[in-house]
Length: 270
Length: 142
Image (cartoon, chains in turn brown, yellow):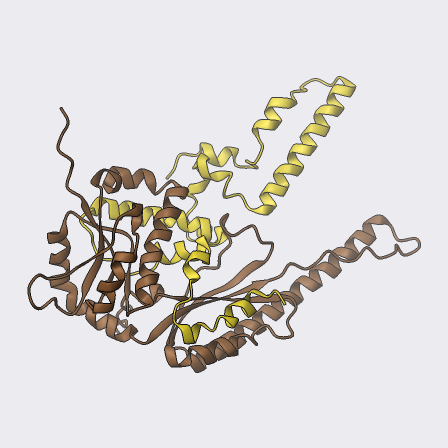
């Protein structure tokens, strides 16, 4: 009683213009679960302003029950996230791309095309705004204050007093590192005002995935940088931690504009 | 100089477009982007989307501040045995280790002086990595 194999689901990575460069690129890409990556757009002579970049994925691996279980599995999730990211990143190297959130799935091509028909214009507007821009991540870390040097015990000082003195010295070094981090953050903000078009703050990273380092992440921003300013932006950032031994400034990217893909929230009613 | 920034700037990303940052990008950086950012459109797997929203909150704990999550009232991991030990912070782990060591010393002292209530070994081992979470875990999720 073997049922016929279920029809695949349509996994969508991103929205892009249906450009020739994208068509040429896709055959070289490998998608989630090792699947081929293809372009999906309206049939006929006019493909419309935008297309989906998709993979056909096996239904049993990606239906509701499977996803529920698999999203709990960090190893699977890492694979899926990295595969999704690889596709988006490769696209971003060749064209403007609107990354979709991980695991956006449709029953079939027809259902996905329906979304392209109704939302294609909105996607195209958003893409036009992101054109010629690149996302960079900027993090500021506070280095841990080293334990105070074991000073020669003052004659007559009790061990308890010596301990307290050492702790006080360490705490003051610690506070100094935070002051430096504040300064570095101000420098980053000043650089951003000159060279960036938009900013999105991510939560500071401190979970198990990042706790290997004893440094504390205090700033985790994403900036949208016009391409003509990218070089100056990066050069200016290189000086953000200058003279500040207690902090580290890390720049990541270039990224596809993940943090700026969603339209900004509508302005609040006055 | 082995500063990571120097390496990044040396690659001159502005001119070359996209160097292979993806392969080397940290999992935390990728997850916070592909799960938390990126445009959200309703897929056909609607129930799943809800699940994913929920799980995104869960996974965010892996990369975001535990304290901040607590401020937001998110504390599910305290009830989730599969994650509670993994999400312990360094101080917790240090406390747990110290706790265990003190328990062992106490047990040793009890044994030596033949005090009642010496139940060392298994109990102490079972508490490894789960400091002060016993009561929280038994509380039913609200």
